[in-house]
Image (tube, rainbow, N blue to C red; front, side, top):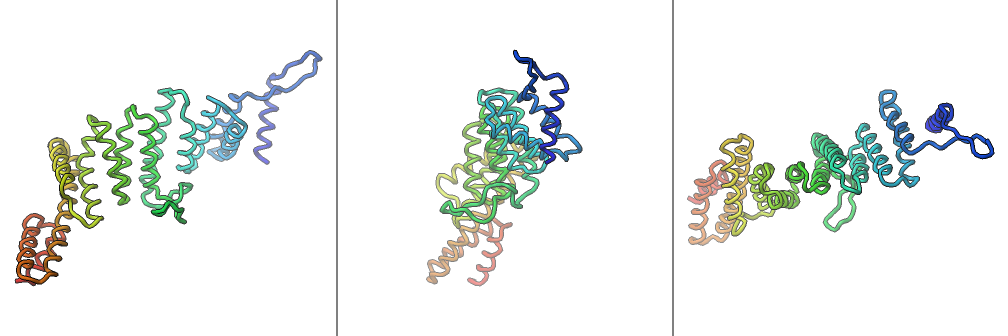
Length: 324
């Protein structure tokens, strides 16, 4: 009812202000408000009464979209809807509207404005952590079937960060989008997706500051991914890990942030490799013959010497004591 009253008041105001004309028969008619006038009215409503009229503004923007607005007018309607959803804390809905608002003909200023808004949205979702993201898609099982829970705020943030890169792959924030997406997936334990984002970053933007940061983080993800699969890092992956760590260490000399990343990567590698070696030692112990026991003792001692600060080293010491 309030919305209907508002529309009537807009039309009446336009009539009173002289937006009328006389046709050839001198019959006065009210000219319909232009799209621009409608958008200006909606923009005023976004901020009116301390935000109490935002739902009215959203209704106007949706009406424009539903009634077939085209080109710039359609982009502005979606952009206005995104602003309203953002102000109401509906971050996923704001993202969906924002994605529909990108100019069909590339416009640097228009794209930059939307990219910054997406970065803000993703940052807010990151701070909300692993809780369920309101309005976001449902989770899926391994077969692609919908689950009853929605994706988390962190996963929603990862998707939005990736969209930043997709929407402006040559823009200044493209590398950052992939770095932050990789970090979000890593925090969620979604190591394969995290690895994909980091690899996309280092392969597409090799000279970026973000790639320098990603080197050690990729090593950490590879180590955690291997550990989750109950195996160590071997072969070509091991060679890659060492190369990336060398690059990360070179940059870490003058950067406390990179030094911390290298430390975390080394810790993840130590946990993964020591766990794998401990599994092999337990296998040799289970065989029970003297040759296997000797091999187990060698591995257990190696774990203690190479990875003294790991949980596997503590277990190795206990097993070694029992074998003496």
